[in-house]
Length: 304
Image (tube, rainbow, N blue to C red; front, side):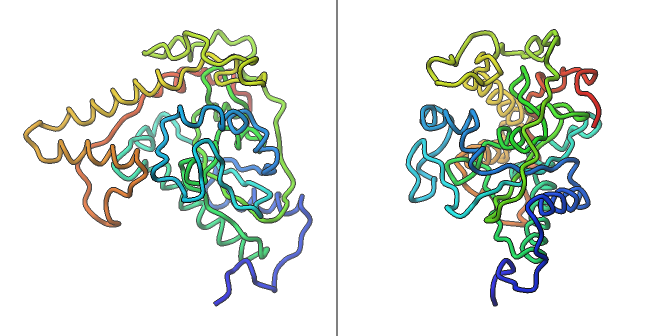
C-alpha cells in the first residue's frame, strides 16, 4: 500500500492557500493557534544558529541520538522545506495539563493527537509528505520556541518564553515538517515586553535571570536567550531537579514506587520509553515551576 502522500488524487493549491488550509484545519482539530515557517528561516533562527556551539553543554543525551547525528548537529530530513507549528493553550484553570506523570504531560498528549490527525489530513488531502518531530533536538527535533516565532505566533519575551497575542506564554507547541513549500506566516511585529517592569524575572525563585550568560560578541548574533542573554538554562534546570525531588519525596520512602518514580524520570530524560503502552504508572506527578510564565501580566499580551 502506497503512503498517503503519494496519492495522485489530490487538491493542487498555491503555497498561500496551503498555509491557510493547514492553519484552519489545525484549529478545527483543537489547536488554539497555528502557523508556518520555512526550514531555511528556522536554520537561521537564534537557538539553531548557536546550537552547534552550545549543543554539548545542553542537557542532552548523545548516546541515544540518531546514528548519523554528532554532538551539536541538527538532523532534519533533506527534503523538508516548511515547518507547521501548532499551539494549545495551558490556562491557569487547568494546571494539570503541565503535570509530568511518567509519560510526559496531558497537554503534550493533546498536542501529539492533534499533530497526528493534522499529518494524516495533509498527506491525504495534498499528497504532501510530513514528518512528525520528536521532542529532543538530538533525535531530529527542533527548538519549538524559535519555530513558533518564525511561524508568526509570537515573540521571545524577557522570560525566554514565547509570548503570543492573547494567550501570552501560557501555550505549548508541537511541529510538523513538510516536503512542500507553504507560505510563511511570520515573523510577527509584536513586542509585549516593551515598557514592562519584568515581574517574570522577579518571580524566578532561583534567580535564573540574574547574570549575563550569553553575549552578542561571543555568539555572533544580537538576539540572545532571555532577549539580552541573561537566561541561565543550567540554573533553571536546578529548579526543575528540585521539582522532581519534591515529587519523589511525596511518596513514602519505603514504598517501591519511590524508586520507580526516580527511575522513570531518569529514563525519560535519557530518551528511553519508560513503560509499555497501557501499563500502570506510579501514582505521582512532577509539578514544574511556572513562576516566570504565570507572573507575565495579561495586560501586555494584546488581543488574539
